[in-house]
Length: 418
Image 1 (cartoon, one colour):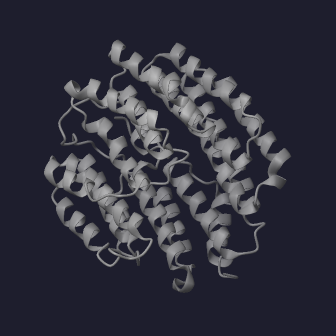
Image 2 (cartoon, rainbow, N blue to C red):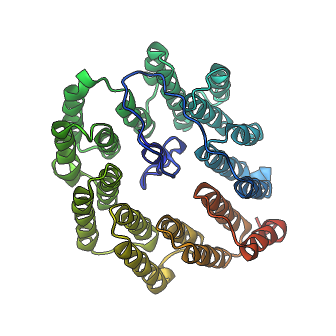
């Protein structure tokens, strides 16, 4: 499975397991649990600088009462380091996390090491991941934390070929949202002879009408669509489910996401006609949906623009991005200022993806302007961290002016009030 599909942040999914972006050549499909060794691209100095800058911003969060926010943001920086393949940097940051998220990060590091074919220390990190949640077991309302770590560990155990332990852990997971991690990962481990059985499972779950299980099965279909794209019959069966059979039971935002992700798959496999068809369906659905909040609409516009670019329609992609910025400017009064960066960052990333570097840098500057309208340090710091991680992950080197501004922010503008 290519790195984009493995790491892309699903618009309705909050798990670091599925977050990240970047593109990678398609790996050979295999039913073997052991991931093939793959080299990591070297991390450039400016990317390390940006991630260290982001981590410095997490230090501004006072442990009392901001420990939850502080650790969540540190996990975001760990995730960014892993998106770049830097397990060393990710481990450095992981060791400084003060709550249960340290365990989730150890599991994520372990997964990346297995992806790279470096398994020597993996079991130790998985042990540390499970140990980190011992204090959470039995805590009222905190089952999702335990389930999340167990789900992440179960995925790595399956990658290592330890099906018995993977199934044992999976059996203890009670929350639907955490089961999604396991369901989507089935696309990687599915044996060819179990394909028809998997489709029957998709159909059965989609009839239930329960949002999270249905969405998980459809996301699994997208990843299978990538894996079996060369198989005309299986590809058609998956496409039918993604595009028609079950989409009525999911919200419009998820439907657009699924169609756009599938369009990117088709484009990366060289089928531009199919990519354009799927993009058309996604665009029509967006147009038919009467009202979008900018923080929901703009990430979808960015995804469609990148799909258009991959399909060879870069001019249309550029038009879509320009229209998205106009939409934001016309409607930003309806967006709470702490969420404006979340709306605009995907557009900045998309400009970079289509080769418009100046437009991308200009938009990152605009993102900082919008974020720092908020008088409170917490949302400013969160937006700053997200911006630094975005620049690093997408390999966007700041200009001297933007770098100076970022340094000034982390040094002087995140201290108060909390």
